[in-house]
Length: 261
Image (cartoon, rainbow, N blue to C red):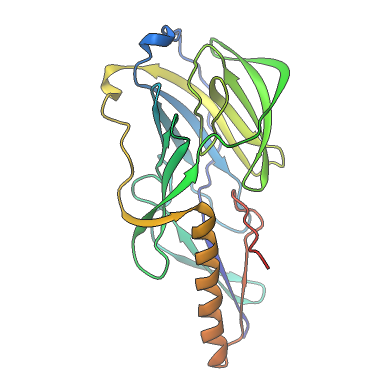
């Protein structure tokens, strides 16, 4: 029997009703900690989806994106056309936090520790997207947002950002525009980050904290390379015992990475 192993980190959510909140953003020099709520939808094929909302807590210098509907950390197996298809579905009890440091152009996120249990901290570049600013304007709640397009980790994104909110952050790992991204999506339909509401409250003052876990001392590219090498080594070990196993990159993953040949 042929076994196919997929290594997937899945965040997948169902649509939510868009709402707006009746308040204007304060002056630039008095920006408090605030929160934007999104419907976070990543459309993954062949996998039961777990959908929910995500929240972005932000101020001038820092932001933290938390996925409230993130799956738990257990793995699941499902039958496939070629026998047993084993899918390691990785979740995060912390909500897959993405911590962004705006001026430092750096972000920290959690991923599976390679070769071990638990979650490790990996770094990535923040705001490095080469955005193309577009002339279209669209209203979200009380905010007139401008359109921008850009490529990030293998996918093209369309983003709507509010110049009235001069914070260079947004949902997921997106950012680097002259205003807060209130809504974004991939142009191929893989993912949507839909604006629900925005709130301003002193109760959010303790929400922006870095994720915790074992330090990997790797950035995104180093981590992906190490994970791929580890996976190939495991496959080679199993093949040496006479087990015919193959591994495939998930073509519907939000972040696409192609190993160097």
